[in-house]
Amino acid sequence: MQPGDDATMTIGEIAGRFGLATHVLRHWESMGLLTPARVVAGRRRYRSADLYRVATILRAKEAGLSLEQIRELLTSAVPTRRREILLRHRADLVARIDALQDSLRFIDGGLECEHDDFTACPHYQAMVRARIGPHATPHIPA
Image (cartoon, rainbow, N blue to C red; front, side, top):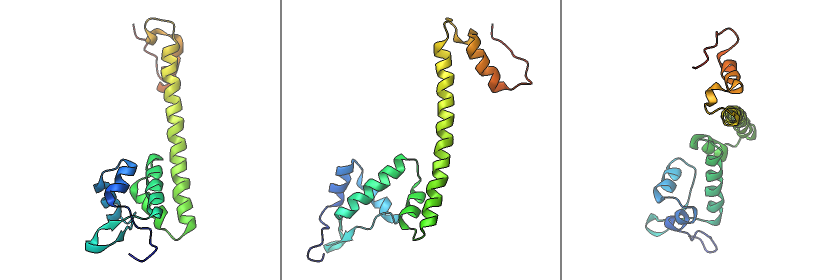
C-alpha cells in the first residue's frame, strides 16, 4: 500500500457492513465487478470507493439487473452502451409492473365480491371471461 492510500477495510469488514458473505465479494471480484487493493501476502483491502461500488452493485441487483449487466454498466467505456442497458431494463421493469398491477386488480376483484364464493361474483367472472377472449363460450362454475 502506498502512503495515504485508504485501502484499510478487510473483506470481512466490508462483507459485514453490507450483510454479505465473503464468498460473494470474492465472486464479484472474479467477475471484474470489484478490484480491491492487495497488501502483504496478497490479502484484499478495500477502499472507501469500494463501499460505493458494493452499494451500487447491491442497488442494481435490487433493481433486477443481472451481474453480467452490472459488470457491463460499470466497466463499459461507451456511455451509449450503458444507456442502452438501462433503457432495455427499464422497459422490462415497466412491463413487469404493468403485469403486476393487472394481477393486483384481479386479486382485488375477487376480494371485493360480496358473494361467499368469489367465483360466483359477476365482476370476477367478467375478468376471467376477458382473459379467455371474445370467441369463447363462457363456462360459469356451479
